[in-house]
Image (cartoon, rainbow, N blue to C red; front, side, top):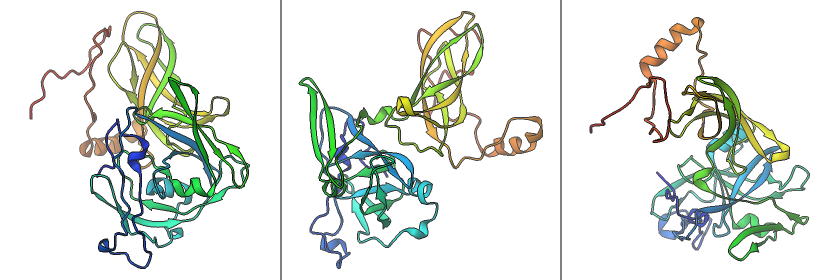
Length: 320
């Protein structure tokens, strides 16, 4: 089930509205199920800020139209590791703008800090099962009210940029990322490779990428090109001076020429994947794994200008 699974829907498409909420009445007939708005805007950029929960840096999507703050179960388990800390929720479910019902697994009231030294704000967070599309942490209007937030747009008239200032319990001007959701799972690297050379390089992630320091990711290509990415598993390192995470990926030059390259790939979280090292000691495990899982999961387009001098598996026709 997808919550606002369209690239051109703004952060407000995630909005949760509590209609005539009565904690003593949990039946749908009592209109206790919050709703998700279907507001559209012309751009895909959404507003994100970094926050800290239990000393973990997390990027949350700010949605002033959402009555409540929401967290995905996978993120909750990374931070707390034990579902027993969840309290019974006063909201059992809410509806998306497309009228899909989302069950609430529970709630908690963590201290959300705006920096490692910020005193923090205690706000109710509702935990739901992971759903494709929305961010793992949605910061709603309840947090903004508690922090007495000033939200404005500044800068150039034809290129405004959001500004968020919390005025309580202390004044704090947030670092704001104004980025399109579809770019959050991309990564980039700069490299120089000789003919047919393979190299491990540092990939940088977008500042608003929804990852935490304990995550493991898989970096892969978006398309076949002269310089391509070989799927690589990596942990993450936060680069303080650049305010973003970096990871290690493997690239290869498929041509007979030396090339300076800026390459853009994509990544996915693989925290729950089984990892098997490719070596002689693991032949049996690898064979058993390949009997159950495909060696390849997707078909990539080849860039029209690519100069590839090595043989590759190609697909010329796909039938239903």
